Image (cartoon, rainbow, N blue to C red):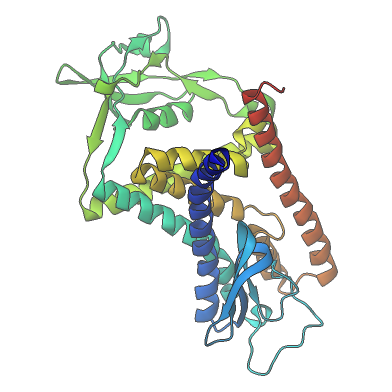
Length: 377
């Protein structure tokens, strides 16, 4: 009996944070679609959290069916006249008098309704990051140089151990991650770097060397200057923010995280990434538990990161995803006519296989990760 109770407690420790993360992010994403559709007068038939067998449902005064389903890995909003949850129009659907289909609205309105889901995820990320910055502050690894490698760009520029990098090309930096991002993106380009050396500001010029990458990314080398910064306790600083500063911080961090997500997806597409960079539901559940155990602010930051990732992924130009719909709308706008329904149907099938393949990669990555932990592989 004790073994069963321990197992249930352990399972709950993983499930509760994971379900909280999933339900919040899915709800906000679908609410973006829902509210924008309502604003433009489109009739919403179903608002679902999860897929599969229905656990609970109710109807609102607009007769929208709100449902909670068994499998919480996603959700959808279904508009009247749609064939399914992917918002593919059903030419044989019988639409009640007074109901308004998505396909009947102007192109610009349809685009806003589709884009509203990812935008809601981005807004959630900004709010969570800004709220955490305002109430808790933010912790940063000060770019204090621990060592300078001989004969590397930093050494040739005159950088010394103990120097603190405070700006690059007139852009203030307060975190080593910002320094890494700027240096990596500027291989071979001379940068004006200002360091704090014992209270004095020293201007230097450093030209990052180029480190070649493999595959198609070889055309985009990484910049390196040859310094080390250690994550020691004395190298961390905590900043506090007022309301407006916190919002600015949230916007800036959301942009930075979005760029990193896009770069990560690009490396996977061109083959220079690793399957270990893909997190499946098991890994997400594990990290959700760890961040929840670490405290509310850690878990909130994790939710913000996943919300942003969901927003970015949904904008990929893959049919059945929001980005695929926007791609079709863009083509429709250029052609000045709707795309042939048969072509759209084929594209939806291809998109479904791609999305299922990505989900399969996530599960496979989880299997490899846990296999290594258990010494199976």
